[in-house]
Length: 175
Image 1 (cartoon, rainbow, N blue to C red):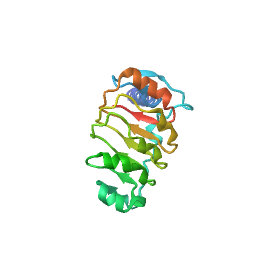
Image 2 (cartoon, rainbow, N blue to C red):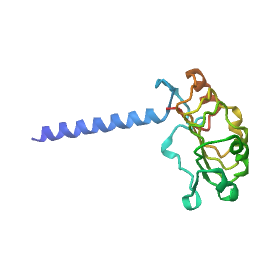
Image 3 (cartoon, rainbow, N blue to C red):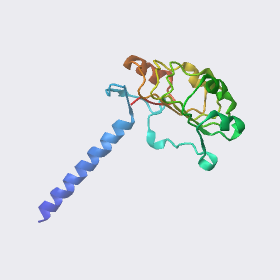
Image 4 (spheres, rainbow, N blue to C red):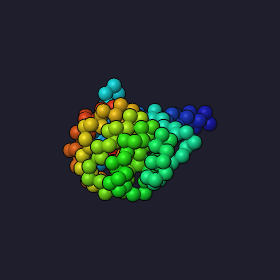
């Protein structure tokens, strides 16, 4: 009976160690959009551990969905998720200097609007489901920017590898 208990405990310990090793490797490895892992990135030069990412908090958790209300109170805009992004909106983004979260998914963007570079408090930028083939290096000028989401864009695996070195302190989510 004691042997069965010892074997059971040993198996559970081996499983636990295996899970820990898997997650340790997973959070210290970048992946391409093909799902293949690049070589592990040094912790000091690349941010890859999502477990330490703290989503920004917005006062009152208010989310703005259209330009009109946002322009009436630009200082209150912290989280902006427009249903459509006409040129006027893209030209007005730099008015929202307190914005922390900007969601520009499904806007058919082929480039990142330059007005984004004037958002000093931007922490999360979602550019999913657009027509982007690359990200501009100017995104590094936004010191507060921690995460860029670029799922479902026609970005090549080679460009993704370049992004991992161009943006060593940003979390790039491509899957």
